[in-house]
Length: 189
Image 1: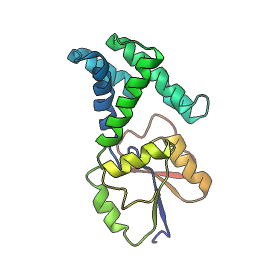
Image 2: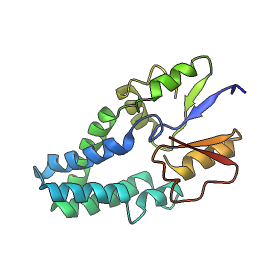
Image 3: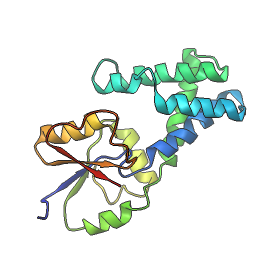
Image 4: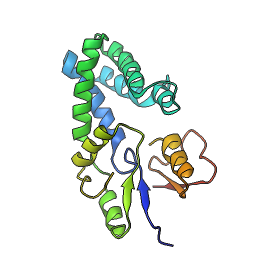
């Protein structure tokens, strides 16, 4: 059966956001404080990716704003780097992070082939992140001309709520730590 349209998530599905975040979170911090020891760099990356206080999850479910979760995560990693956590330093870090992140994302190796296979089907990108930031990523990844427009909760449940069949591309192959919403399908990479 050929679908009449395809809605795709951007982060972690089309573009390798996790790899970009690993690099950019440290680079933006080093813009503020200078070169960090490798152990501190690794600890910052681990903390940012793991997000043990679940700030991003709290944003996804509406408990806090996107800016609140980003600010809280910055405070955690800045403390690890011995950097100031005041608003001035946060604003500088945030600007460096967004500039580097938006310009640094790359599509996964299989994305262009996948999009070529769908060339006769309307495609759109659906995201739960600010539009202007996502447009920068699309352009940097070379996808802006091809697409007009990964969070299990926001992406899969959003697709289910909109009515189409939801298929989650589990690139990490870990089945996600949460439960797949009823009615959704999982495809491993």
